[in-house]
Length: 220
Image (cartoon, rainbow, N blue to C red; front, side, top):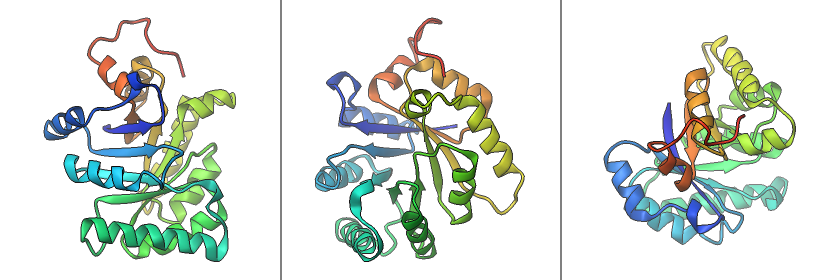
């Protein structure tokens, strides 16, 4: 199970510091950054500077209200142009684009994957959504533990079911990513279940991993 740093618009205690990210990346403890900030794409320059400093994969979100059809396509290609400009990479291989799970984004996912661009689809709430995401070639399908809890869905059971489905088909290579995790006990349960490829953690949750007591963290 790999770790990503999750960057949210949250209280300062949950935020990551650049020096932390750099040190953890150098120690190979984090493999990527996932951006869940509603101010994106206004924060593009900050994200690009952070990625160039930390040197790891970045997953950037598109807002659900970014449009349909031609408007959606224009938004996608604007971001691709930004990636090429900032990274001077033809395929921008160390940056991925994150979409909500909609029919429009699934069509865009297929097109982008054919161009070699990494895509994450989510948040996901069902096995059916996860299967469709895998069939259009998503690099990752993401599950928000907080959103699943709020919806009354057993996160561990859902992730176990998705893993069973993915493992049943040799041609599925999509990774399972869990984020919006409340505490280190949740991380422990996800690790024990062995159903998740990547967990994305806020700064405060990651810091708690070495000092977690048996009563810390909320259950899934």
